[in-house]
Length: 183
Image (cartoon, rainbow, N blue to C red; front, side, top):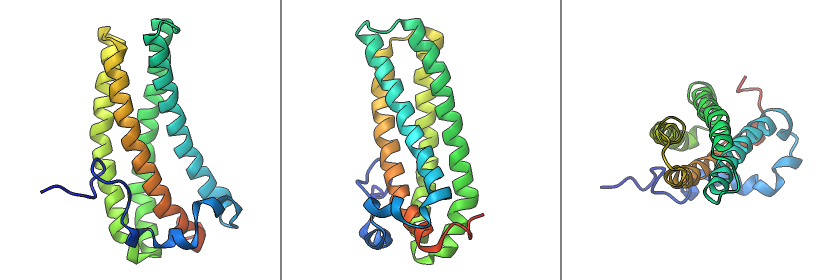
């Protein structure tokens, strides 16, 4: 039996968990009075994760094409890959221990969604471990960058799935209730 809501199986959150998204559509988030501050900062963190994975993928592809020196690619992989892993771990800890419990109290009908996102973080730990092993293969063992790129493509797809679902669940809650109950 598979879990249809597992990170690697779903294509989005169930409609029952996206009810606030109808009232607070993504296209209107930045115009909402509760957007500036916490929501904006939080979405910028998500954008940073997306930019780092794109940079790492582009570097790997450029190195594979001979357009980027392997040593330069390794230096950038060490710097940005390490930052990605560390920042994601920290981001998830804050969400799991602070944001998700606070947001669950604001919208008890969405508790199931926060549980799904929490399980995603457990799955992301495994993805981050695989990412780190593949990156270390390139950095320490001289492994070819192609398999790392393939791992990165898989990692990026699952990370994006998680980030989109997280945004569509959390942002409408904060827009509705304001950020004061989270601090």
